[in-house]
Amino acid sequence: MTAATSPYDVAIIGAGVVGTAIARELAQYRLRCLLVDATGDVGTGTSKANTAILHTGFDAKPGTLEAQLVRRGHALLGAYGPPAGIPIEPIGALLVAWDAEQQAALANIAENAVRNGYAAARPVTPAEIYRAEPQLGPGALGGLHIPGESLICPFTTPLAFATEAVLNGVELRLNSAVESAGDGGDGAHALDTAGGTIRARYVVNAAGLHADVLDRMFGHHGFTVTPRRGELIVFDKLARPLLNHILLPVPTKLSKGVLVSPTVFGNVVLGPTAEDIPDKSATGSTAAGLASLCDKGRRLLPALLAEEVTAVYVGLRAATEHADYQIAFHPGQRYVCVAGIRSTGLTASMAIAELVAEGLRDAGLSLVPKDDFHTVRMPNIGEAFPRPYQQPELIAGDSDFGRMVCHCERVTRGEILAAARSAVPARSLDGLRRRTRALLGRCQGFYCSAAVTALLNDLDGAASAAPSTAAVRRFGVRWLATALGWAGWKRSDVLGFHPPPLPPQSGSKLPHSTE
Ligand SMILES: Cc1cc2nc3c(=O)[nH]c(=O)nc-3n(C[C@H](O)[C@H](O)[C@H](O)COP(=O)(O)OP(=O)(O)OC[C@H]3O[C@@H](n4cnc5c(N)ncnc54)[C@H](O)[C@@H]3O)c2cc1C
Image 1: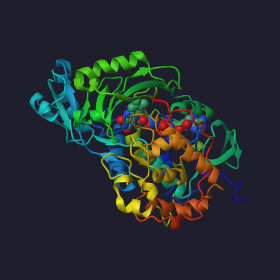
Image 2: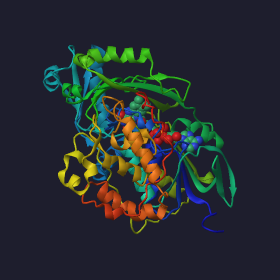
Image 3: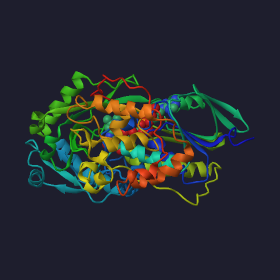
């Protein structure tokens, strides 16, 4: 049997933040792994539409797997993020009680935090709250300060994981929905996709909202995913000075509740709602949802409602009938299901990946560390970090980093070209937005989408060949360590590294304000 026809050691279904974290974890070992996704990019599902908070796990239900993995994930991602170029801002949160019942719950929440291994939460008086947050609406009765809650970039995180996985040998197959699973012979699974059959000795199901459908293909019926819709409103950057912390409500049984938080892009976000719905694709906003957010926002931070709205987006939590994550190992079947990762998967992703690797080892997969593992440094697109247009030495090396294309978000031609040529390249306007912030700003692409589209189309025309995996590995490490790390890049370093072909873009189509 040749290498080409031999099965993969592991196939991971789903390239959200969870699947990409698992791929990155397994990339550290001498394995042949495949990461497969139904869509045309990584991080396009729930992972691109969340509240983007790196949680401490203070409010998780003690004793649950979720509590354990969020706590561990906070530590792992908190350490991994900064050197990998993932914007993280540890600004802390204030959890505010607005009535007597909520006030009475504070002591219990603080106790639970300690049981969850988080001892830094401390009670704050109304006077302290209003000193810290002068714009807060009237009527706060008390609260908790949780210093470890942080802002994080939801876009860069799965991209960093996927990039590191690809540069260390994981194959990424996009536009390949797994439609059925069966026996692939010689002890391997066979996964049928429109693009052909994938054979793999071990399979990890990280399909998010569709994990129940996949799980049934493997003969299991332990849970059903019911999407829990969360609508959010993004306010203009002018609103950013209104608050200093993440402002949390007292959580309910259904959700963490509606919060107000800055984002790493310098905006302010209000949300999310929580509504169980039957449709796994219902990512449109609703008048009722937005109205309820405005009501809550008016009470929390009255001045916020006078600010302009930049965008509205909707994320679907992969909720199940169970209160905890649904991570199940089936060693005899060489199959792992990673499901029910509802409201905390961005935070817990690296801890989930660690757990999955251990489970695979227990199921007989040999995990031999590679001699060399290439780390990445992604372009840091956070507002609190230096951007390329602010770096004269970078612009002196390549004037494209001084040529502004998206004026709202200050994104340069150099960044767009880098994103389109990276190891996990942007192939659409949405992909570009998540890699560079282009079209993410106040005008939502009204002014720059034509220029950005033309640039992508030019690249498409100029591309003579997609980079081979070998070329990506050869040039990608250097590319990411230098060009994408924004230090010392010269064009000559990447001569011969052709941008991959891009799909045709519709020149007139503006990006949606809802995702
Ligand atoms: C409103 C909201 C707010 C949230 N806030 C936070 C927060 O502040 N902090 C936090 O830590 N977490 C938060 N979360 C949770 C977090 O976003 C999720 O837990 C996480 O994104 C789940 O990642 P995933 O990889 O499991 O799923 P997804 O990102 O949905 O990825 C699943 C992937 O599987 C692919 N797929 C599905 N079916 C198939 C198939 N048959 N074949 C191939 N591929 C397939 C999909 O295309 C998709 O790319 C929030 C979630 C929501 C909705």
